[in-house]
Image (cartoon, rainbow, N blue to C red; front, top):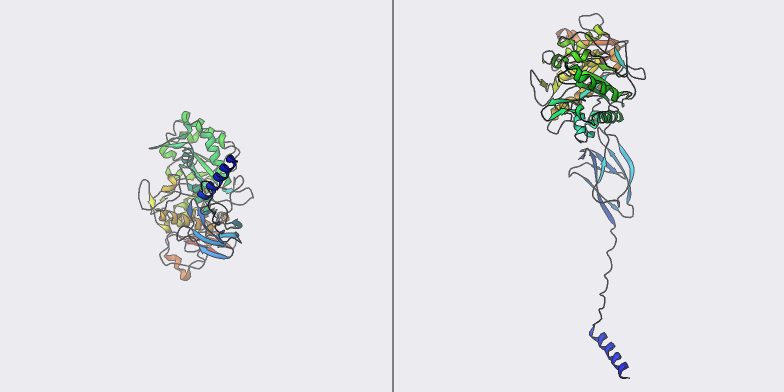
Length: 459
């Protein structure tokens, strides 16, 4: 009995003294939120697309004063349809999105819209013009991207450059595919991964609907023993790729002409040798010609009309391949640059009417990149060239040459004011005509002008 009494006493003591822990009451949990707030950011190359219209179930916000658009939605309806529309980009959506998913901003990459269809299929040359695989005349809309392969092989993401070209209607990227002998940049062909990287670049451009002009020799082009296997390796690597074009040498009149006369198995790739009659080279052409026309501002606005004479003399299409570069500054002489919008528009309009087209040269393109935020003039000039290309269709090349002093010049000028113009050029095809007036006097105009460009379209 003593033992039992002791146990009972211990139990009573424990309960009254609280020696055994008693768990505290559990407070009721918070009520689930009745609303969810999320940020939505339309982006391009990691930057918010300013001015984009973000539509969430019929409600609109314009991106993005604070870098994001912010939305609050009830938990009872967490799935919303999002649509984004922005000038220069393909419309995104409508796509359903559950606001309960993930954390942080919902970042939506936009895809640039393109002013021209993506390139596809092999080109041919006949009647001194380029033709696409659907049997239509084709216009060269190029851009210098000299160090694009150099940047890719350095591990840089080159998608921004590709997207920039798509947005501006570029259909040929001119790339120094074997590298350059410049400070901080070397010749690429000595690296073991060179040809695989070259093939990858061509494929990436093809996926974006862009052709590659592979410019090979950029230094010591008289050293045929050194460069001939390099050029052949380019042909072998690009063989069978519909978007491949080749230029054997850049500026042979500077770097040496011997390689341009060498023999290669071109593997069916349309090619230029780089020889340039405008710099005293003979009229020796492979499939097409590339010319670096004189860069003095007195002639630059209209010297791309020389492509017509080159075409007539050789029976091959010619491209204004490296004219004055567009830039944030003006510079004469070596490395000439311009900010003159009317001059740039005039040059590329004449190249589109009378030649195979042209390649926009620039400081940013020389470096193989897109324009930076501190290069607004360069970007604006490129947009101007894109508008020129949209004003003049490729079939304009098929018209007959006319000038004010020749019979059949289109009736363009009110009150015969063409007599005050020093230069004007036209191509006439049936009932249609395209007239280019390089550097018209400010304020001079006539019916049929394409936007505010020195181009007139007449029916």
